[in-house]
Image 1: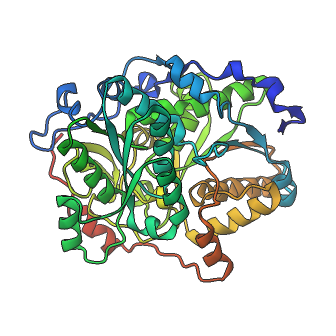
Image 2 (image 1 turned 90 degrees about the vertical axis):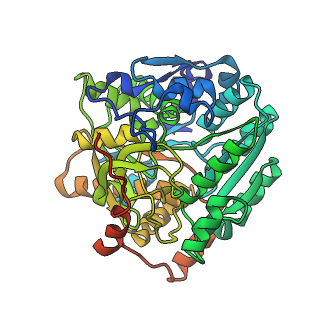
Image 3 (image 1 turned 30 degrees about the horizontal axis):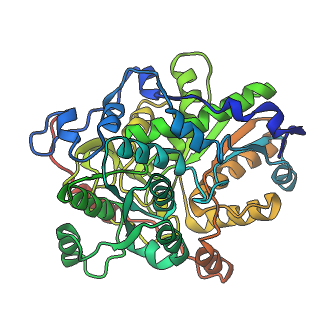
Length: 458
């Protein structure tokens, strides 16, 4: 692997894996609003969260002030199996685009889970094991988080119960089988296995599900089964903390070669990849040490940032989880069954929502067919088949590079390549056959979701 014609390993060695996670909240002048108890409307305490989450993860979730959290040796040892991940300059893509821009991508697909999700999965599983728990429950959209968590649980000897969004369960059977190979049980959501699943199916017969539905089911099972806790692959503060290793490595690599990116682009569903990629760069921006243009990219079919409301909302469709102040389409909004399953969440990380609200980053919504056009171009030029989620970032990176071709500007562009698309071939088949369509919700569609927002005066 080469960057600027320098062998990758010569400037970012194994010993340079960060030994601490960076907590972006410590440098935020306006902190993200606290999680609220839906019953009382008051900020949740650690005591109220520990029946749902692991104790150490609750501490990380609520800590807005500690800048760095040391990474335990056991987690670092696990990271060494696939980290540091490569920062690659896309020379071939640049040539195809005939652009003066220099395009780089941080590739997080070089592990069996095929994505960045393993960075937090092993951390959350580790803390569950340290607490003496029997197992964990979770939801998964495209299946990358479920795959990563099943791997981490197998490594540590924990039971793993996964509720997979039904449309992805049906579209991506091979992803499901990888989870089962690692010992996880996988249930299509909404299901008849939980009270909330039964309620959702009664209200929405034939629904293809959503991450909000699957979260509700996973939380219900965790709370009802002693020795289990719920873990989440995105949105939460603790997850963005663990994923900061992506940005820390990227920044270290750029510092080695004397490059400072002008534009940083990441796909945004719940916020784990984007939040992790931008963390140290946004930290510099918040401290006034440097400036970067940061762009969040989301699907036009689930436009939380670009068309959502900044308000307190439930994180799940069943309305049993805490309330979070975020950009949201309403917990009752169920997006169309597009192929970027990991981006089909109705809300967004409270950290990223606050940063966006404060004007510190931009957001852009892109349509599915244009995303796959970019994915195809990237695959043909760079030799990696990208995941549909990552391809949203590729789309905007290409658009920014083409603008540079028009203006002659020599910008350095960084985007996050969160994973590979080898389990997404049904989507590629639909695109190649010309059968892929774009769905953009109408204002009336969104109004139904907004109508269900809780009335919170906070």
